[in-house]
Amino acid sequence: MTKEVKQEQEEPVAYFSPQEGGFYWAKPTTVTAPITVDVEPLPLYTTPQTKGCDECGNGGGYALYCLACAEKYVKPEWIGLTDEDIQKLAAEHHDWESLYLAVQAKLKEKNG
Image 1 (tube, rainbow, N blue to C red):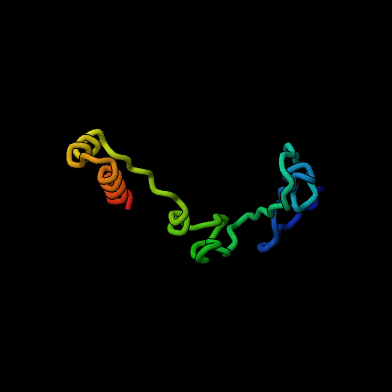
Image 2 (image 1 turned 90 degrees about the vertical axis):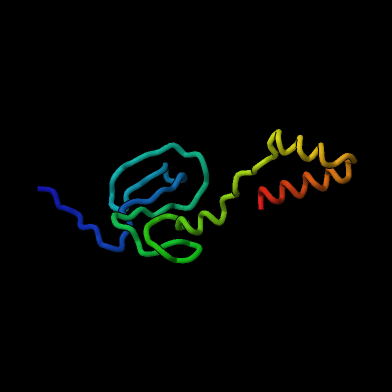
C-alpha cells in the first residue's frame, strides 16, 4: 500500500532550476529538462497565488503585468508618410529646409 502525500495550499508543487537539471517536484519525484541558462529556481503552485501585477498589484496569478500595465510598455506602430503625403508636401515646399520642417511636422501629427 502506497502512502499519499498531501500538498499544502501555500506550498509549491514544483520548482524550475537549470542547475538542478530543469524542473523538479517539491515532493520527491524525477523530472528533467535541458539546461540553457543560470537562473534562480522558479516555484510552481497548484492554484494561483494572490500576488497580482508587479506594477499595480491588481489581479492575481503569475503574470508579471496585467493587461493595462503591459500596454504601457508596448510601443505603438510607426506610421510613415504615404506617397500622396510626400507628393503634396513636395509640391507645397520648394526649398529643402521648409520641406524638412513640413515632413517633420506631418510625422509628429501622425505619430503623436
